[in-house]
Image (cartoon, rainbow over all chains, first blue to last red; front, side, top):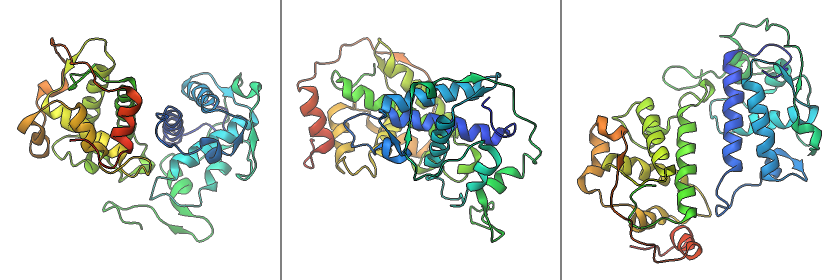
Length: 164
Length: 157
């Protein structure tokens, strides 16, 4: 587990795990494809695809462990962008998913800010687990992904796939 | 390895494996991607998501093996559709790339290939069968072949 603000519910752990696998595969894309610049997508400087891959593997292993690990401030910021990269292809998800940051991320970095990773960012430190999550596991995905903040308008898909 | 029409170059083996990994990851989508289904996109209506995932895993294992395995018609058609999906929408890959790759590499599967549009897979489609023949050598170097198949509008037939 990673040291989120609170203990993550299974839906969020699944999202983090999938987003990291997705980014690892992006890093492994054949180089004869004209691949998008991951450095640009994640707004990281002085970093190779291999560096990004190494960091994602590290975070993935940490997130799947029963021990709790604390990523660095910058590693958390990259993870935040990795999740948004994955969610950018989820059509039903609201554009306004800052709630994920508010609920889960212990740190926040403006997306426009360039991240420069150092060697210390690839190490995870063992820490105590985060506090229990007070929110309902079944309601939390809706709050994080499908609600337009401020307007109170739900955009949760119904069974027919239409937005409510 | 798979029983391609000829000995595959590394770039092609890597493409096949990466495409299959992508397809497997699509089968494991978290709930927030509800409504997105690669199996439906590929019109594999007679397979479940688990069927599709399992078949991709089977083909992936075979493609990574040092031994050569024979694709069933169903497996070949699923792999063909997965590659077409990976090519689709890539501005750097020409529209005829999937047809060129099929002509260059895919074994003849005859009517069996169409089966996956109309019927469910058989148990044998989830197994690997060893191919005891030898693949013919590849008559073209890796780089020109890759450019010819992926980036050449004329394609090959």
